[in-house]
Image 1 (cartoon, rainbow, N blue to C red):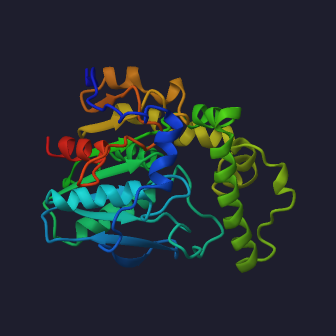
Image 2: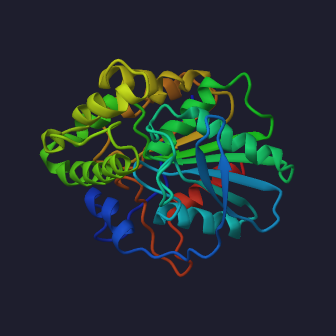
Image 3: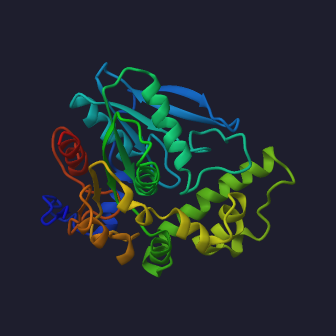
Length: 320
């Protein structure tokens, strides 16, 4: 029963508010970003992915998947890479299609069911021949992708993949979207929809006639967006079908490597179904840790090293 009964995370004074935890790292935290070496790789469907390597010649590697409308330069990714390097683990942070600063070649971009891209990146890392162990780390949507990949591919997973850690995971996408519909969380939803709109407009410029944003102002929720764009562009019946088929909670019981899920109980973007208590209780591999505080990918901690609790927790779990 891998339920972590007591989390060690304690928020700093005046930082127990979930929205402060969620927003502060993005707006205030600054982590050095000079350790990346970028590699562009072509995918089997004639698209590309931009991979950012942080390499010190270590024998262990962590593959990092970012959140929705994020990239490898988000503070949570940079902070994790920095702490991994300091603990003898190389890092490979990868950008989803269209997230690296340049639009991807195809009409579609990334989505929650893109586990094939996770597998492509992992296989690419394996083929370098430089590593004896590979770990997976995911944040928010990246956690959903990571856990879905591990469950779907449990029988064919490369032997080098040993452990995973995921933070603030929307294990049930429908429930997470319902959380974003709440008035108190409107600021997050508006920000996401605006950023996604920019991607749509970019696609309109490079692929005229194939996609449009007519009436985009009428889109008020992720259900609206996924019904109009994500589902039809990626072979799903509608938003509900997309959420049902790509939510990682359906694949957790198949995972066969030690995998830690850390989601704060006060996460504003998660609701009850996003906390897979029963699934973890029935698993020998999936560990669920639910700190009282932490917001969404927050887990702030103040120290001279500029290391957050989530980064220390990840390394602690990866080292067994």
